[in-house]
Length: 231
Image (tube, rainbow, N blue to C red):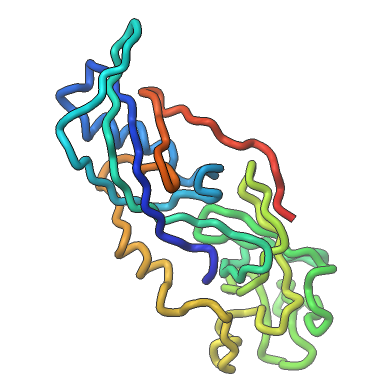
């Protein structure tokens, strides 16, 4: 599946002086707010992380409350879908006019009727609606099916994807794999394998920045884009 990358990041996290004896815990607690939310710095959603605090020294900031900045190095697993990428997801709802999908368990996608290629016809089978291919009778999309689809656009604010089943290499993954139709991405870099490179901390947090430094304060707030829908 496309859209998954591992990024290296150098961060400076501001920690309250009352947490000086539990710096790692404070950093992880603060960074945990970044999981499964869109971040404009990375232009994607952070799914998992691995962090390292390389030194024991921190820069103390001047001010009424002397926060200190902790340097952190991180590897981040990022979900960053873009137009024309191929994604995979599970069909959770299906009707005459649309197919609704969940990607990676958290991001929703909708494929409208005009974006479903003509070979797929809506039918009622065994009391449930399905989209069945008129060219290949065993190629059926129903609730619970895992499908491959093309990204048309992404609404970053609500993490909603508009998709398409027009390309011939999209559809039910089980049928496509049985007939040797590849998705054109890199099968050797599956989500499971990427997560081996970037592991989760057992309790909290994730790191944050892109090709430089990102500064977070003790409350874990940071600037986010709450606009743009990619077309």
